[in-house]
Image (cartoon, rainbow, N blue to C red; front, side, top):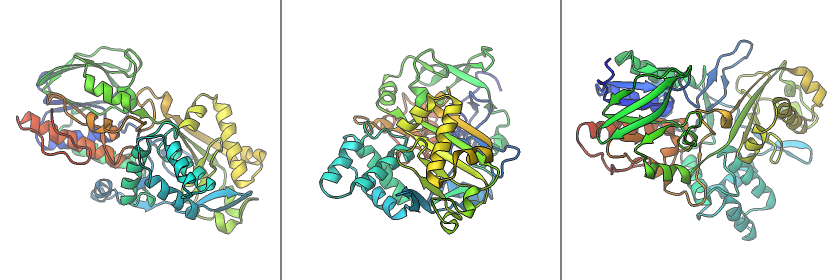
Length: 460
């Protein structure tokens, strides 16, 4: 394919980028997908490691509720979607108890959040009105900072409430996993792209600059080794890099320059934040909790899905249920993830084991003796992610919609951060990639895009 024969350059081979490429090649367009990493997937990072009983998901892991976009793809690819262990436990007075009733009450209050004020302020107002007690407030805050990777002192109550209401509409508390790993979905999309365009994908290709004028782009990139590549010429570009990369300071690793600058995009990206996330998986020689622990009888612990330790060093843990194994996944979002990111690996491990000791009552030496392996990913330290997923701080309402708007029918932006209702989800990212591709096709045909819907905006 000649350098000047492209219709569209897609920047990023995560969920949004691959979904966009699939729409474009199906329409017969000449496409090149550039990915900075040596792999596809972006923040979907499935590892199939020797000795591990199930795929290791360092990024996205769960299918949330009735995510139709994703479930339809899984069915088409004949990928099984298996429900996780749904029982939630939390520590109360030194005992692990069923957290679901209090958690559901707390989440109802999160869904009721309104007003462009900090979440903390809105929760305090609910406490003062007698609508929730201190324990429910702590659990609601724990959920906001963990699930949404948000700093509750800065995140917009209106923004979090909107996301939670959309999540509840999908029954997103009913989680499932793609059997064989989340990457199977994206491998299926890539296969569909390469069936029509075998030469479309370029890995280890870091985009550093996009020069553009109406109807023409020149994309400048280098290999991960530093080799400067000839620029790619095309009629349009779809940029699907994460919010953290859009916000990256000029000249920093992974940052992309736009010439001329795209001021509306810069302002919208600056109005959002990339929520910190850190994920650590510990593989124990045996599932020590199955026979019971000092904090719970074995019957309560068998087949449980999640354990919560609000305020703990690593506040959320989950099992591989329904697969029985000795693997526990520790999850931290928001300020806790930021704090863990600054620690040395041995200190992080100590914090993780301290959390498990508190949850299960199993002595720390015993946990260390049982620990066979560990895998961790700090998404803040990843130059091609620079955080987990988008968070709307106070004053940031409307920024996602602004990011979704095409620029001169030439630059199109996609990714979970451009979705107005399903930010932070793989299915949301896929939908934005499809939306951007359809808008791009309309522009290439000389037509204006259709009316806006969720995550869709009119061309300017």
